[in-house]
Image 1 (cartoon, rainbow, N blue to C red):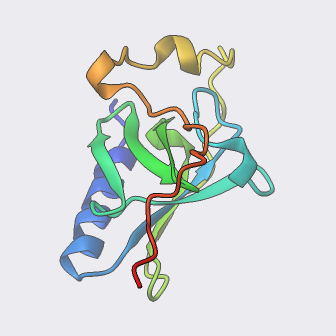
Image 2: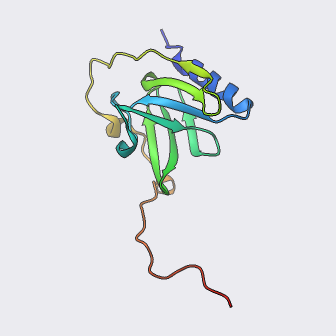
Image 3: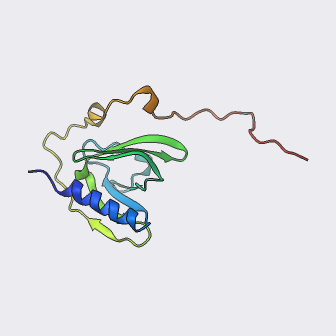
Length: 141
């Protein structure tokens, strides 16, 4: 049987966006296959802003949610299973839906990178560039 979790998450996402609120998801960062910036994980969880204006290439399939997001100016590719989502809610008022934690799959090998879709050169994540010593602004008197 197909889980109803991805359908409920997508429905809540659409409802939140339709109300002009900001959808956030709380994700179990330790769930197998989750790829998120670890420096933002707190107590094994991370909260991600998934508003269409905050992310690029958002895809919410039945087995994998993925998008690109910027963290301190550096674009990163994010991957997680809908089973890793603990809640979806509106930042403005907290309205949304919690989900019970899912048991980790028996094959709990960390194969996130192996299962992650191949990215073409045009979709490659930007690498941080070294700071240029030349200033891009000039003083006009």
